[in-house]
Every structure is written in C-alpha cells, then in structure tokens.
Length: 177
Length: 276
Image (cartoon, rainbow over all chains, first blue to last red; front, top):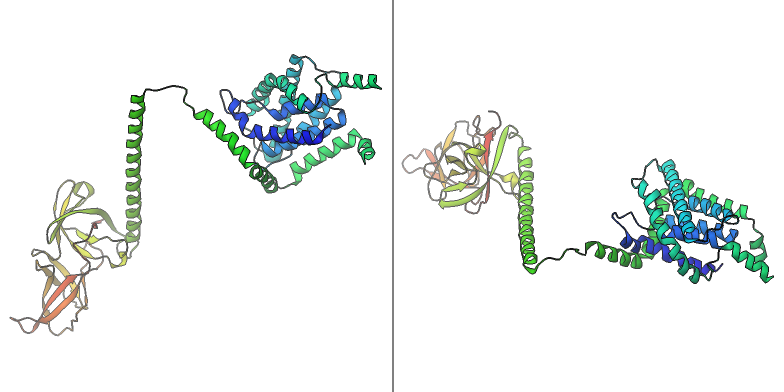
C-alpha cells in the first residue's frame, strides 16, 4: 500500500467532502455523496486485510475530523468505519463484489451501517438525536452507491491498484510465485 | 522494522484502532475534539473556503432569467426597501433612546406616579410659545406641566411651561417666559407660595417677595408641587436679578431666567398623572 498517496487521497477527499461535494447535492443540502465512504469501501475491497484495517480507521478519523456528526465530538466514525471496514475486508476473502451493481449495493449497505452505528454512538455519548437521520442512513449511502463504482476507477489508477479485486490480485500473486 | 510491522497481528491492529476510537469518543473532552476540528478547518481554510464559495455560487445562481425592465424594477424596489429599512432602523434607535431617557426619568424620586409623555418640539412660532407633537390622543391636556428632556442634562431637567391648548395630535405650550404665564413657585426656602409671571422678553418676574428674606443672584426657583400635575417640586428658573421694587420699597423685584435654553430644545416631556 502506498501510504503517502493514501494520505493525500484521504485528505483531498475530506476537503472535497466538506466543501465542494455540496455542489452535487440534490433536492436538499444533505442529499450528497460521501466520498470517504466510497474510499472506505474501495480500500476494504482492494487492499490486504492489514492495510484495510488501518485504512478504515484512518478514513474514519478523517471523517470525524472534517465532517463530524455532532460538533465537538470525535470517535463515532472512527469506530464505525473501522469496524465495518474490517468486517468488509474479512468478508472480501469469500465474497468479492466485482460487478458494478454489487459494488453499489456494498457501498449502500456500508453507508447505512456505518451511519447507523455512528448515530447510535453519538446518541449514547451526547444524548442528542440527529435531525437528518434519514439522509445519513439512506439517501447519502444511496447517492454514494450510484457514484462510488465510477470513482473506483480513478482512485484505483491513483493508488496503482488494479480493478481486479483482492481475490484475483492474490491469485495473480500466487501465480507469480 | 518492516518485519516487526508485518508481524503485527490483524487482531491487534483492529483492537488498537477500536481503542483509539473509544478514547476519542469517551475520554477526550469535547472541547479538545472541537479544537482538533478547528485546527483542521484552520489549516485547510483556503481550499475549504473555495469549495464553499463554489457551492454558494451554484446555489445562488438564478435559474430563471428576467428581463432588463424587471431587473430595473427589482433594483428600484430593493433600493426603496433598503431606504425604508434604514429609516425604520433610525426610528427604532430614536425610540430606544427615548425609552432609556424615560426609564431614567421615572426612576427619579417623586416622579414614580407620573406618566411622562415624550414629545418633539415642532416649532416655536412666537418667542414664548411652542408646538409639540403630542396631543389629546396621547393623553395630553391643558394645564399639564412640560419639562425639558435632554440626554446630557437629565438631572437638570426643568419645567419649561404649561400646556395651553390641545388638538388631537398636537399641543401648544405656554412657556414660563410668556406674558400670560402664572406658575406657583417657591424660592429660597420661603414658606408662603409665590407666583412667577412671564415678562415676554425671555425672563420672568416673581413679585411681592418681602425684603426680609435674603435673595441672591443664582438662587434656584422651584415650580411647586401640584396634586395630579406635578408630584414633586421641580426646578423652573434661577434668580438673574434682585432689586428693590420702585413702587414698593419693602418688597423685592426679582427677575428670573429659565435654566435651560428654550430656543434650542428639541425634546420635551409632558407630565401626566399616572393615577386616573
């Protein structure tokens, strides 16, 4: 894993997410894609499991830093991204979503699950219920699911990770031996 | 080093990450987390601001085109609304200023049961008479005392005259210097009530003060308290000249002058009894 590229990519994504992604909002300001969620799914699917764990927590940290669910609170997204990113990475050894539609479904499910857990942790910590629950758990993951598979290509090119998925990548590595 | 890193188990990595998350969630104070988020926002303020600017520009871009004529009309309406808003703002400030003054005035001892009615001085057509902006609709009535109202000299507030005529939205005030003005006053601790009569030349006189009383130039003249009109004696003038009366040598001929400049007054207050 090229960690410097990874850091730059995550940083760029978090900055874009905070500022520019609002331009892609549909109907309402919070109906917008989540770039960090797309990156989470990408790295969970394309990297080896150790790198995926680190990447998941790091992306969660960036998400908490740039787009916190509740102001002055960090941790919910570190935990939810780390947990579900690791889970997806482990599951990826058995199911490897290669078709665009499967990748979209994966992004949607991951988005809903991470948002749900984040909101739950926020509620447990602060006692405050987030107003845009539906947007965070449904609309944002849905939008990200539509956009995500198309972003996998430039991200994969940027990270020099082929679009073959880890199983095929591992198989290729075994053959190379 | 690489080998050591590689040998770190996945479980340990996951547990470490989770621990970091829990520490941030449960142990790090919210102020510290907020500071961290602020540092991020500060460090990347330029790209963040640029991104937000693009979003704002996109959000404010009009999707409907309007004709130049409509645009001109809208601009004109906008300017009118802006002017109206500025005027209202000014009126609000003026109302606030008057409210502050009246609150201070009501707080003065002796005036708690009086209801001050603030008014603007419209004009001073003749030397000893002025028209004010409040009338019957505000509760102004003939005979009520009118006091000066100046922010800088609230403590030196003085009686300037008496309401002589009232219309629905205005009133005439006969100043203390008017020839027909006749106000009960007290001076220099005299027990017997005296009257101050206007002279029509910007001064007033207090006749028939026995020469047994020591009167000095600068002594304060008070308008006497009058039930329902003035609950407490208020300064009205000061002695400008004191000499023996030519016709009656055993009494003083006292000339008094108002303690405030009546020609420059812009705000006054009519004292109305709060008790109906």
